[in-house]
Length: 158
Image 1 (cartoon, rainbow, N blue to C red):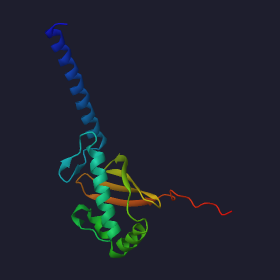
Image 2: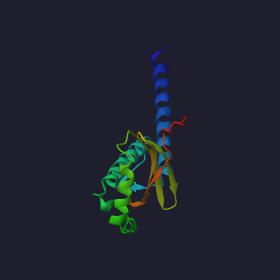
Image 3: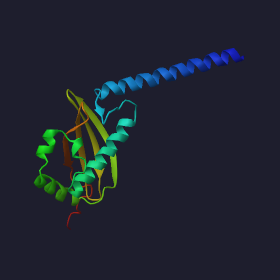
Image 4: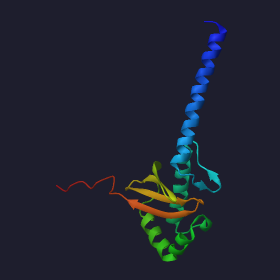
């Protein structure tokens, strides 16, 4: 094989990889409906999963501790709904689960006006799905912790 032929094949391969990457970034940008989160558009493949897990972990820890240190990240409606009593009850419920073992990205749900991210949180005693919804300004418009049945079922009594 001569050098020109190798060089041409190399450029074709690089072009194909570049096209695939550009297509994937464009698909991800459409997928998240141009939601800007804290001034940055999440567009690169894989970044939304990492970002969603980091946010879920941060907000889970806030709620489990019973205090929210980042009220500016919440929409005005969510700030109104997040009363001290609501936060206290949610904190008590989440503390019972104990220390999280793992956070795993579970998906996203783009809809008109917001994008929801879902993260599975596993514990020794069970698991929950944390849902975080963001508006186009990057503010949280919803937070929910949905519990599943325990991962370890009690053994039947003989």
